Each structure stands twice: as structure tokens, then as C-alpha cells.
Image (tube, rainbow, N blue to C red; front, side, top):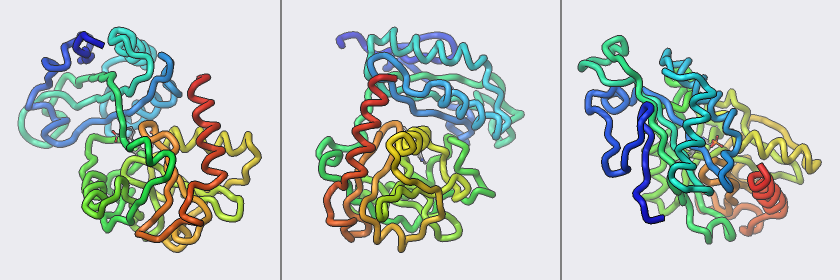
Amino acid sequence: MAAELEVYISGTYHKKSEAKISVYDHGLLYGDGVFEGLRAYSGNVFRLTEHIDRLYDSARAICLQIPMEKAAMAEAVNETIARNGLSDAYVRLVVTRGAGSLGIDPERTSDPQVIIIADHIALYPKEMYENGLAIITSATIRNHPAALNPRIKSLNYLNNVMAKLEGKLAGCEEALMLNHKGEVAECTGDNIFIVRRGELLTPPIDAGILDGITRGAVLDLAGQLDIPMRETALTRHDIYIPDECFLTGSAAEVIPVIRVDDRPIGDGKVGPVTKRLAAAFHELVRKS
Ligand code: PXG
């Protein structure tokens, strides 16, 4: 596409190079805001309603009033994709607390900003979808639910950024985060699943994780494919001994994991249940 992408900011479109937000915005100053990452396939946003519901729930949890109705938000997302001539796209929806005076107090702000970016995303190289990803367990734990609940997709991702950095420094594209109890939570931007003796296992939401929309879709697919599944607390032990392991996320989709902390998972190759679910997921998003 020749034309420069356009970004939606609170009702108007700006060229990507000119799309700007105030340096006094508390989204920048304090990470005070929420976001969503969505995918469109052939012009259709996958599970748009669920993403918008989660965005409004995140906002509500931090007492941030989004200055538009959900229906208008959905329309703005679709319009941003269409206006940019995109059909397969990644959409980043951001709502900031807005510009204010210095000081943490959210009451010192006014005018929350709604930003919609439609662009492309490539989180992992194609080769890793075929042959699997190596991950490490990060020493950085997931946010304690009593501090900043991981269900809130807030602009405070520094904890996850630090864990991702640990992964990168160890030569891995993703890193597993444990929760404050030492149980498996999720990766920095993806939920985690394992397969053990034919059963699909994933940590429950109360392990302190994001209620992933791809995670939910994969659990639905497992039900439809008669793959036994359970949401259950997992430890590092469980993650070291399964037959298969994979991650899910809007950006990542379904990506196999073949090594954890340098230990091979199963036979070190992408397993059959992972392949089945990845194929079913691709079919689902393409007909959504
Ligand atoms: N856990 C965390 C911490 C996430 O941030 C997921 C799980 C997967 O959730 P969904 O609903 O997407 O299945 C996420 C989502 C990025 C990027 O830019 C990250 C996500 C989504 C889109 C883009 O790295 N993470």
C-alpha cells in the first residue's frame, strides 16, 4: 500500500508520522490507561465484541470512563481498518487517562484519549510456527493480583517487558512467568497450554493471568474436537514433563513450544494435538 497509514485519535485521523499525544498524558507519565490487541482476517475482526468488552472491563477496573459507547468503538475499529485499505491486520486499541498536570492523581486529568492503530504484526518468525519455540522461565513473576490484577490489560507492561527481556537475553523469543505462589501463570504476551497423556491443561484465570481471548477460542475448539481439557494449577514440574506445549495470543495465534529452560518438551518436535488445534484455529479465524 502506497499511502501512509492513518491513525485514529479521539475522532479524527492523522497520518502515522503525525499521530501524536500530549507528553502530559498520564498514559505516558504513569502508564495510566488500558489497551487491546486485535486481529482482522479478510477484513473481519476476530471476536471484536469480546475484545471491546475486555477493554471496557479493564477501563472500569481502573475507574477510567471511556468517552464513547461500545458500538461506536466497534465502528471506529472497523472504519480504521477499512480506511487504511487493510484486510489482514493487527489493531492496537489504546485508551489513555488523558493530559493533565503533573502528579499521579487521575483527577488531575481530563479528556481521555482513544487511539486506534491498524497495522501489521509479526511477533515470531514463520519458522517457529513450523518447528516450535524455545522459552525460558523468567525470574520476574507476573504481577501479584492484589497489586495490579493481570486481568486488567493496562499500559503498565513493564513487568512483562522485563520478563521478555530476560527471555531475549537468554536467546528465547518468549518467557514464562510464574505467579506469586510459584505456579505457572502465562508468558509475557501469550497464554500457555500443555498436553499430557492426551489431556489439554492450562492455568485457570485465578492463577493471575489475562483472560485471553485466543485461550478461550482454543478451549472452545478443544471441546468441539472432543479433546479432554482442564483448567488447573500447574507448576514448573508440569511444564517440564508434558508431551506437548503451546502458547496462544491474538498476535501469536497458536505457536508450539518445543523447549522450556533448555529441556525438550516430549520428543522435541511439534506434537499432534498442537497441530490439530493450530489448524482448527486457523480455520476458525478465516471463517469468522
Ligand atoms: N497474556 C498476556 C499477558 C497478554 O498480553 C495474552 C495473554 C493473550 O491474550 P489474547 O486475548 O490476545 O488471546 C496477551 C495478549 C504484543 C501483543 O504487541 C500482545 C498481546 C496481544 C497482541 C499483541 O506483543 N498480548
